[in-house]
Image 1 (cartoon, rainbow, N blue to C red):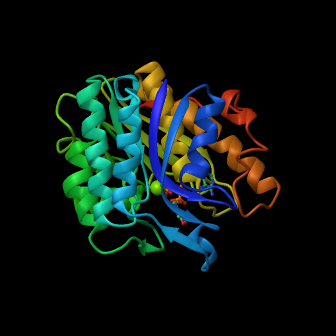
Image 2 (image 1 turned 90 degrees about the vertical axis):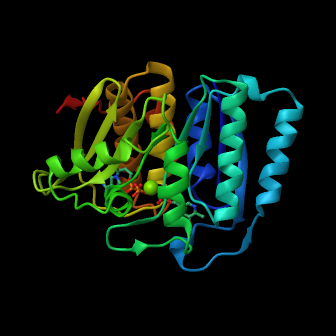
Length: 286
Ligand SMILES: Nc1ncnc2c1ncn2[C@@H]1O[C@H](COP(=O)(O)OP(=O)(O)O)[C@@H](O)[C@H]1O
Ligand SMILES: Cc1ncc(COP(=O)(O)O)c(C=O)c1O
Ligand SMILES: [Mg+2]
C-alpha cells in the first residue's frame, strides 16, 4: 500500500505528517510524505519557529514523484491542515493526478477548520475552500463535530442531527467513490459524560463507537486517526472495520499519553497500539 501524505511537519512532537507517517509505516504502508510546513513544534504552544512552504514546492515534489513513474502505484492521497488556499489547490491537483493515474486511488481529506471551544483557527478562505473545493473532490473526509456543523450549517446536538448532517455532506462528495465520512470528537445528547464518540458512514452503513473520555487535550490525535482510518478503510473496504481499528489504536495511544502526562502524543512509545491495540472497541450499527 502506497500513500501520498501532504501535511505539516514538526521537528519536536507529533502533528500532521509527524503524527500520521509513522503509524502508517508501522502498519506496513509506504508513505510518500510531502510537507507543507516545517515548524519547530505545533502551534498549540503559542510560539514556534520555522516556515510555511509555498504551493510551488508541493507541486514540484509531486512532479518529481510522477517523474519516477510512481503515481499509478499510489493507493491514496491524504491531506490535513492547509496553510492557505494555494496549498489547497496544489493538494487537489495532486489528488486529481493520482486518480487519473490510478482510478482506484482514494483521496482522504481531514478538513481542518477548527474545534469546539477554539472556533475557526485556520486562515481566512480555508473553511470555504474545505467545504466548496476539497470535500467535493474527496472520497473520505474526517471532520470533527465543529467542522461538520460549520460545513453543513446544521446543528449537531443529537445523533439524528449528526446523521442528517453527514448525509448532507455525503451528497456533495466525489461521485462514484465510497463517500465515506468519519466524524471525530462527537459529543451529542446521547453521549454519556465520561465518554466520547465517533460516527462512520460508508457503503456498508452508519456505525458509532464510544470510548472513555481521558483527562487530556492534545494536538495530533486528529491527524493520527485520519491516517489510521484511511489505512483500514483501504485494507478492509469497510467503514465499520476501519472505525473499530482506528478508534482502538487511537484510544490506546491517548491512554498511554495520558498516563505519562505527556503534552505530545506518544507516537513512538505507544507504537504497538497501532498494530495490536491493548483494548479493542467494537463499532455498532446505528
Ligand atoms: N480527551 C480524549 N479522550 C479520549 N479520546 C480522545 C480525547 N481527545 C481525542 N480523542 C480521540 O481522538 C480522536 C480525534 O481527536 P481530536 O484531536 O479531537 O480530533 P480533531 O483534531 O479532528 O478535532 C477523537 O475522535 C477521539 O476518538
Ligand atoms: C502545524 C500543525 N499541523 C497540524 C495540526 C493539527 O493538529 P490536530 O490533530 O490536533 O488537529 C496542528 C495543531 O496544532 C498544527 O499546529
Ligand atoms: Mg481534525
